[in-house]
Image (tube, rainbow, N blue to C red):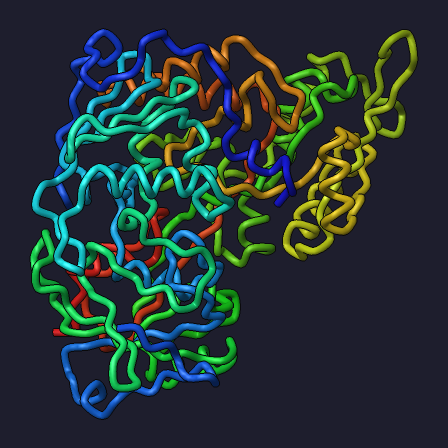
Length: 539
């Protein structure tokens, strides 16, 4: 969304002083006794033209599925920029932890964990006996190598590791992590694929993937496919084989999926606003962690009052935006928490505009309507009308439509509003320079819904600082009991809702679309479209 400063909108590091002598996982003085016990809910390249040369044997296998790859770059799961490659890597690689459809964390390669009493440290116990596809055993060095690789480079998972200040092992099956601050639900950040120690070669097309997942990569006799890994730690997969078709363009990918030549596609590859699934297809929606919001420059005198920002938020008809702009491919929300999360709570059943309540809030914040109905008040001894310019990135048609719709509502309710749509580079520059009044943005929240980057006083896009919010952000990383987590979370999200440095509008939906052949087992979540593939079945 926003270059350079964008990472802070997802996760801003607040550097706290660490206790001296924090050098061993055995140091009981910084680790609490709260323990979470977890339960689990070759070397040939593609042809030059990008097409897979599957052999006849592959096509005769009945207990298999076929998936497509476009924009092939590398099977390195940390560095690939291709969504389709990322999906295929979901069959091969596994994370320490997974996240289910309600955003609860469960163990995959991790057996148990201990969170420090201050929320700034973590011990992870690995499952023993987990084998890589080459027959060697998963160990702590593999985890440390993966985390350090992510920390050292710009990968799709870089923001997940930003709070980490150190990682080391206590023994071959125990990993210790220190953070720069109290981190809520820190284990949910470890949902990235774990790679074998010293196995990565950045950006090389001849990278051979070796994972711990249910399927093993095979390239032989002109064919590239995945076969069930007989020694998978969670049992052999239901499927025997996953065939891979290397395709040259998105049009071919979509046409083959529509012709049932591919058995799986996702909403990153399909235009879900126009896609018409066949009657025997399965469309499995989930609410992503991508939040669309309106941001306020709280240092602007006209928008410095929380009541004014609340009032503008109340003039936003979120249900109408979801229906008419996102074609119901989103879920309306005025709280900064994924509506599908177990921590979510609703205060209104319909997220319609509330013009009466908005007018009351404007009045409480000192605004008076003139004969034309336009709000004004004295600011710094000067008569000031409530005018706002809404900045938006012109490259996103939907967000431009949101900004224009918001301006229309404001203009009809006592505010003089206009839209400033500019290109990506200028949009970034204006946000970075605080040269805006409002903006419409989109951000991918971290899996643990850490609000530090959006609302922490150490730095955010809105020039917002609030000691009560900071205290709640810290507390959320220290609580252990589920009831306490829910209590602190509710207070935090309610505080952000009341202060309104930004106004959430909706969370976007994503979908896994499977053909008639795949019968069961698919269960996408914010972890990804392809997960728990050992459960997928065609029978």
